[in-house]
Image (cartoon, rainbow, N blue to C red; front, side, top):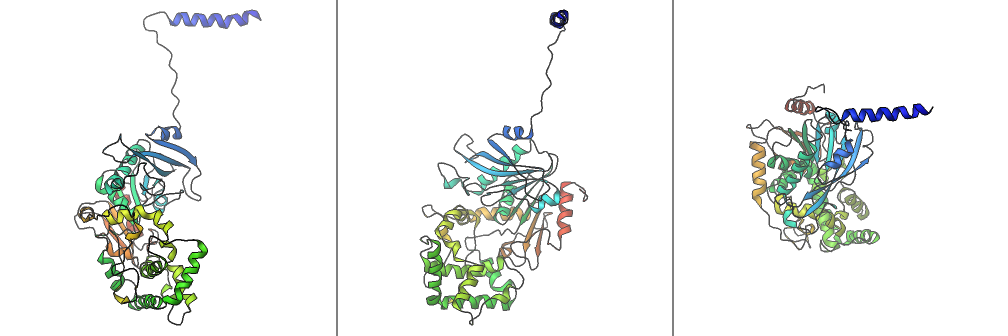
Length: 444
């Protein structure tokens, strides 16, 4: 037995000695072990990655929550930073990628219909400065469309090193505007864009929305019922206000920024007409109360449709970054008050949402930003699909692509702000256009 123990050692020495002889001897090389997906994601600059469960019922096979360190100012990459949250849902590395640009914070992962339709991967990204995606120190001047587009450009560049398939960006409402703005500043980052229920305002009180609400949306009978409801509620101020006060007191809400409970009451009535159509469902016009309704019935109805909760201080704190964007670059809508005569007592002659914006920062609206974006989208923005609901007030500020582009705008009759691709009469046109632009067959 002893000789069998010595023999392997002797052979090993012989091998080493012979390997050292001769000029053309080479070192043995160890084969490289491929990095795992999570290792490659963590190798992307500034990324921290945690694997999570994919959205239930979706086609994805893996999912990750990612925190990416981003420059506050992309022209100064060595300056202050912030952390931007996103969710990656993977089907396969070679599949298309749908970049979902959200207009606000993203707290949890979800699946969007475009990724399902294309059997694509999905990258769902929070907007800078929203939620806890904020820099320290805070700098309002860097909350602008150029820097936000820079965020998405950097994300696209980094993740394309792993996901080498076809890229599309997609967004809903403010997120749809974000997708379009990404294309405006970085037109070659993605091959196509789908922009859903996204108004492109031209001022901080876009009169096109007033005209849409007053003369276009729904039927004249329904519009008349809405105006009558607003007048009825304001005329019952003395008996409705105690119901509002009880509701607010029970929940511990405060209304300092709006100017008190009575101001919140008036804003609730003013907001009602926009919200009614924004989230309209079949038969809603038949449910509008008339003068026979009790105060409690009227209050309950208004709380269901619009709701005074929206104007509380805590909500202002949550969305003040969005309001800053609206009142400096993106524009917004105002309130139709012509039919209310002297019924408004507190909010003034030109009520607006400015009280929901940050109170210590100058709000200087620059109309040239959206003028430039709208002009580019309508004259040069190719491979873009704009989808609107026929009843959604934001449709009054829709993009209308000109003949110089191949982009299309689709308005679905009877649909609200919740319009989807799946419900469109022209659904197949959307899919055919995307397949053509992406160079894939309809069977894929």
